Length: 276
Image (cartoon, rainbow, N blue to C red; front, side):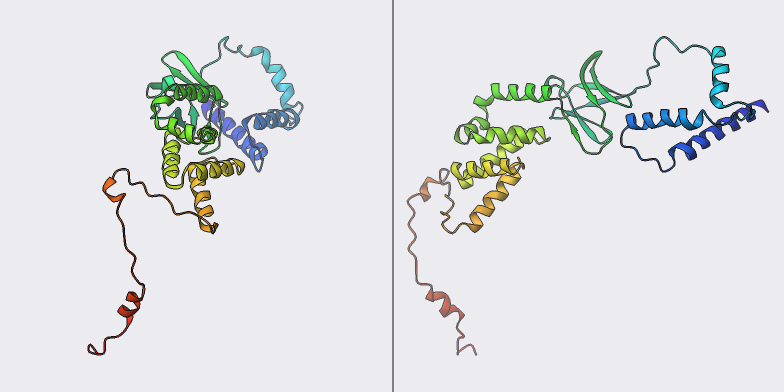
């Protein structure tokens, strides 16, 4: 019977908190919610009459009972959520629909993610390799600038043997666009390949102008550069024909095509009286 009474008290307390505190209460972060909870506890919850007797308040009953309570443990109980994670080809691991960055040296390794209400930590074995403030948004990249810089240093060391070296030499502005796109979660290799294809189609000078415009618009992506190039070609009246790469077909370089009169097509459109 005593256990049932105790359960009923707990359920009534939860119901009181739900209806008196949580109902229609706006908040955006856990820190803000905790501040509101402390203010509500001190101003409303502790000032109400003690259920065991109206001659004292909840705060007075708590002060009387506190000396009889056991002290809190010296070491905080670890309640973090632990899950195994592993990145693919990028410096991000996914947790709760958001992506958190890790050092390039940890890419592809089996890692452990520890999440508290405010912090996300990532471990390689017993070594902590990343720490981030937890976000409760959706589909957001959470990037540590040190991880980005470490990855860019590795890419710069290998730039002499990659297609990106040819792009950066022909269009130096492409470096700023790729780094800005990478900071927004885009693949640097994908952006490089797309820009190289655009340079083959439009030439280095046109690509340079489109990249500068994309950076000014704060849309640092190869798709934005391609859109700008298409717009420039559509509205330019003096656009030169796009050069055709015949390096793989040298037999076509000296090919000569003799144009013919377009009146031939008019004759084809005329009705044949014999067929009628």
